[in-house]
Image (cartoon, rainbow, N blue to C red; front, side, top):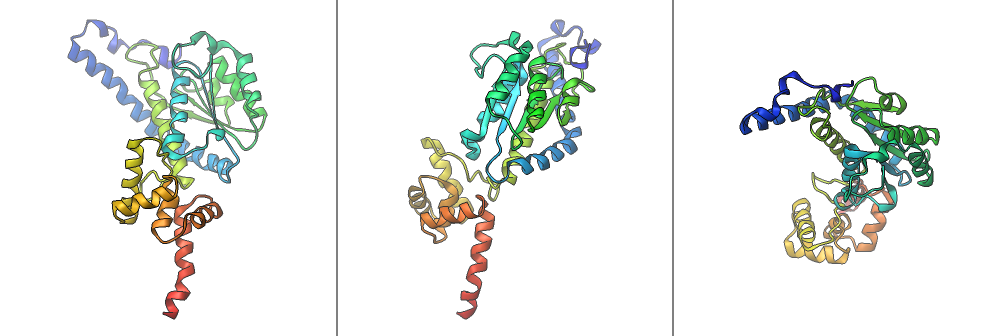
Length: 304
């Protein structure tokens, strides 16, 4: 048996333990997730660099692939990129064995290799794309077939597994081991293994969005302000990063359809159309737009 399936003698009598001891044992297991992700940081850094090579320029897509718990965690990370960072829906593909639904677990679907190959091919996977594939065991047939197909089609494939030496780590172009060892509840990879997967995906996708210019002064400047709470957040972000008043922030956001990035430039004196054009020229990099603007103003300031 592989590591995540092994029974730990330390936790053999888990169900006989008092409540407080049982909870402490479960927490102890979770702490291994942090250690596993810490050990994987160099691999995550390498993955980040290679992902940027595919995704800069607005062509490549992110494809999340998995089955069971791993697949559901993959989908969770993917669906949050749009609301948080404004990641375009047409640049996100979610491939979960049995269908991208959380309403009912489809665990038997993890053996369907044909469905995985078909999903990757129908998605039009190609050289500009990045595939993030998760399988705690590292041997899930659905996930392996998806990775093999995506790699054949030229995509960058990144595999996350919790057991060393497994097929997923070998078949993916980049294998990231999250070695959490035996679970407190033997084989229940929704525990430490799942936590480590969520942590690793959170780190990697957030770092990716930062490097793609979707964060400014530590704020989510590409947030989609689609409800009252998020519109209030957009106002707060704009006040924080520009120092303007709430009234000025609200006025600027109303001119830009509550898009924070162009609103920053509107506060600084641009009209909305010019702000959009400047961001387009600089690939959405607000820092670059502001640096260019300062450079353009210097001669005029010198004359004064």
